Image (cartoon, rainbow, N blue to C red):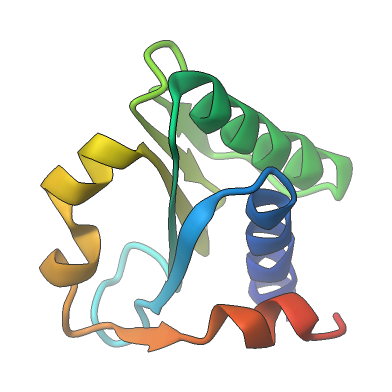
Length: 120
């Protein structure tokens, strides 16, 4: 399934750039916008930018359509829209402030280790 491959790709790319506290929310039945949110953070603007660029590059390299990328200029909250997967890469301070996991508390949180270890 394409969106599962895209989810694995995004999570692995974030992990490769040492993203912290990666969370995956299943948005199925909660939102019509997307199937999954991937939420993570970096401890500096440079790390946020590196994480976001890695996810973008891996998506393009694997032929996925990058619908939108916003926030890279300031690298405090970068949104990467891959249609069925939306990735939020925060600076640590912004992640604490916006707290998307609480905002979308009805969404099921998926185990990241299972995603990282899965064969696609």
